[in-house]
Image (tube, rainbow over all chains, first blue to last red; front, side, top):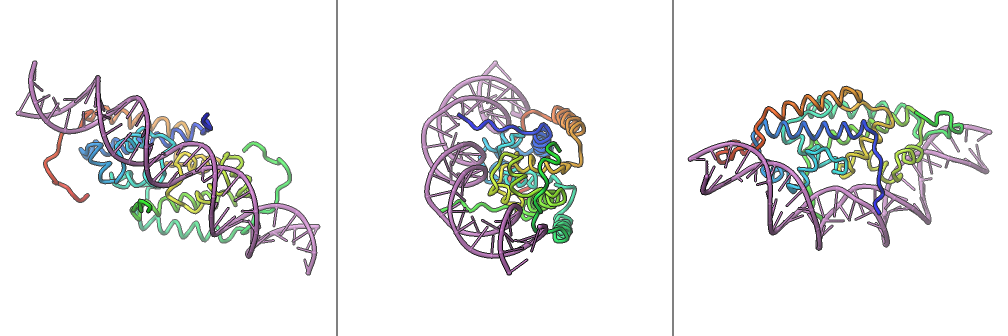
Length: 110
Length: 110
DNA sequence: TATTTTTTACCATTATAATGTCCATATGTA
DNA sequence: TACATATGGACATTATAATGGTAAAAAATA
């Protein structure tokens, strides 16, 4: 009796795209699935699931493989990522640390 | 005795950025952590891990929460994601379905 | 065509992520 | 200040992702 979780189609499509991109980059580099899974220290089964875009994979493993084949996440290199992190951190600091209770269902759908 | 997996700093930074972005968007929308975790049908603990950018979270859950707070992944809306998927699929189809064995360690580092 | 290697599928086992609860602290508001 | 709620940390339990093996089909090469 599985939990049967439901994902937004946007989530599914985004995960699928990342998987396909990984597969394309891998083939472009002429690296076999097993070769790449070895480099990433994951099993062939897991890499296949990642390339299929399955939503149940760990984000760290997916990003790691993407990194290995040279995919840029957020269209940024490492330095840019780090800088962006600091910027977002600063923006968070400007907002209240705690959210005030909202009036009921003002926006049940959003 | 944990497996002690190692992640590229790029992977860690990217995961961290996505988590911070989620947190920022959530606060911007004045949604409490519990409120958002309820909407995403996940526990508060998991959402806290996601916002902390922990690499061990499921990509589907992370993307789902990101979607809920309105973050655009790959800077694309749903239609664009779908179109991109098809494009990548087509590009994959142009490459050989199977990788030919490479000469040994031509590129051990890449 | 025969041979080799890649890819895909399935599955039981193992490792670990997700959960839910409790408690403490911080925060914002009346 | 006092109150109500949000946030954070820690933890045992449960659910499930990752693994590693086998086998078969597909694909590339000689």
